[in-house]
Image 1 (cartoon, protein in one colour):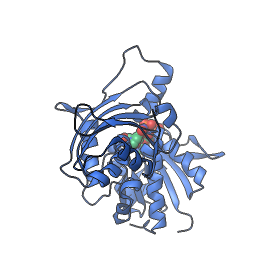
Image 2: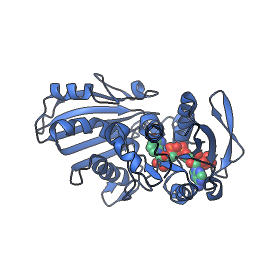
Image 3: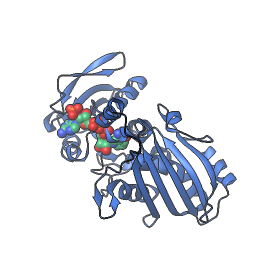
Image 4: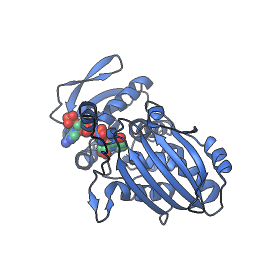
Length: 314
Ligand SMILES: NC(=O)c1ccc[n+]([C@@H]2O[C@H](COP(=O)([O-])OP(=O)(O)OC[C@H]3O[C@@H](n4cnc5c(N)ncnc54)[C@H](OP(=O)(O)O)[C@@H]3O)[C@@H](O)[C@H]2O)c1
């Protein structure tokens, strides 16, 4: 396919705007921008020019005029609009949680399980931003030692909750002591915490992996941080883990990674690898730009895999 016809759905949002930026940098395809009726007729930057935003209706997306759609609109709108776009012949890379755990829908991080992407039946799901950076660090350790247990505490940025939350952080600096856990809770666990476990299990194909998470949002604009503790069947020393992760695709080892270092970059930064003084395994610190590798970039890499393997048609 020479010039895929691409729809960016959610183009006015935090992830959609980065998707447009990355597509323009790559010069990939003929791009159209879609969002809700609220934004229809406005414009969004695209390369050196602008695109007029179209309303994302089932009719427009299912018209047969699109080969590939990137969705970043949330679970409700995705549940309704993605099937319409697929019915019209587009392959959809969806960033919501609508289809991530659906049987037959590949949930893909190219560095980890990119080989799954071409098996799609019209939809490839993009994992949660926290899951993406976590599995980039876990997969090489699993391959070397066989993961048995993972504990993770997250420190997630405002941009993970969308453009409105970014604006709120810019315009109203938080009061001292503001750390929030603003996800829905089912019992004693937030949906972010249960997603992290379920998605990691699916991607690593470890349905019984023991994984416990505590997720929190911190007053940082871009870049999620994670403190991670892992145990493996074959013990790995900190030096062995450093060597493994230094060679891992998409991972850069750095001593003390921060969100500021990660923001605007494409790599998952891993550092502070040491023995877990309270357990049998290792402790590490993982940081990533949640809007790029955690969302838009990962989705574009999936599309590039599909294009390379000529798997764009469902
Ligand atoms: N932010 C992250 O780091 C991140 C990472 C991974 C995955 N995701 C997922 O990506 C999705 C979007 O996140 P975001 O952070 O970009 O949110 P956002 O900044 O709030 O943007 C939401 C976008 O969706 C559009 N939209 C909302 N309702 C719609 C509807 N009914 N029909 C068509 N378009 C609609 C909005 O258009 P209007 O401007 O017209 O309202 C806007 O373009 C979510 O599913 C989120 O879970 C986000």
